[in-house]
Image 1 (cartoon, one colour):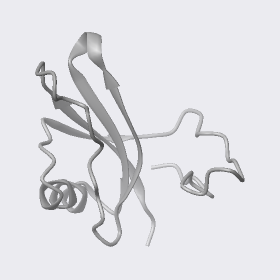
Image 2 (tube, helix red, strand yellow; image 1 turned 90 degrees about the vertical axis):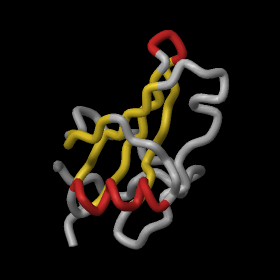
Image 3 (cartoon, rainbow, N blue to C red; image 1 turned 30 degrees about the horizontal axis):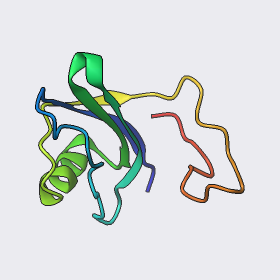
Image 4 (spheres, rainbow, N blue to C red; image 1 turned 60 degrees about the horizontal axis):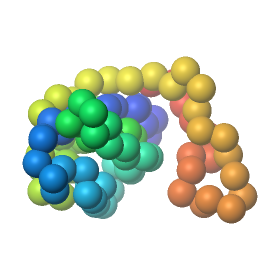
Length: 94
């Protein structure tokens, strides 16, 4: 099954926003990275999954509110590192 990359955005100006990344554990979906942009009051998560509906369901199951979900493509994937087993081993273009 080919995975595609999606961006999940959560907008929130509360002090609790972005204190924890979504725990996406649904089979077929994987959290690649999550960052918080405090100036913009947004949390951005990169998630791999088969399609937008499955990714949205995985986010809902993890109780992570999604304000925007859009397809994404890698411009330059993260550097692979033997010290970080969580980085993608092979990145496929979405």
